[in-house]
Image (tube, rainbow, N blue to C red; front, side, top):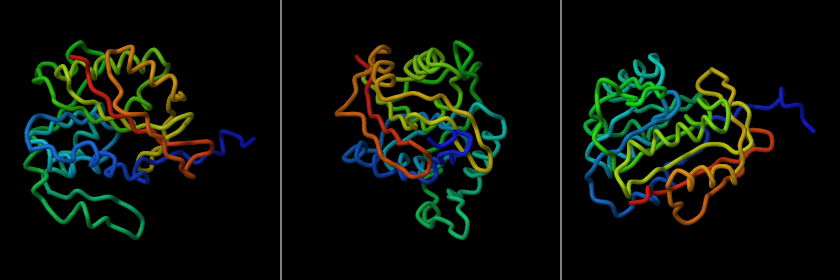
Length: 223
């Protein structure tokens, strides 16, 4: 068995989840509020979401991520940084930034994570990789998931991306430890917090990490 210390951390930038978001947004008229709670300054989802949501609020847990995201919004550059390749798809149009109402620092330990600002109930929440990084134990994952749920209207949608049975993630040049969990845990956590999973959990094999698969979940909050 491969030593876990030799594992290559998974990188969300190498997983094109825009297709899976498109499948869920397709046919939707441009209206409502989406809140993005993703790790680092991941931007794949924002261009796509801007075509389907009138308003987008981006929440970040770290000051540097807030600063970096605000810079991206101010300059209109939705860039995927890859060695030798700038992804032209995300640079072809600056209209996406008009949907982003604000980029805010949040504190997930507070009852109101955006205090002193109170957000209106959202129609959808996207979260890519954040729960994996901030959760030290399964009970933390469930507690934070509950806070995500509070951001949503009854019937609102949660679109969740993560990695199964992983121990590390790479965000930019930073390697982060992540919570190791399996599909059964995620399913029970979601249903336990009042979410109805739509269709099935989708997993995608990837060579990026030893014994790893990416996870995409679409669920909605019970009314």
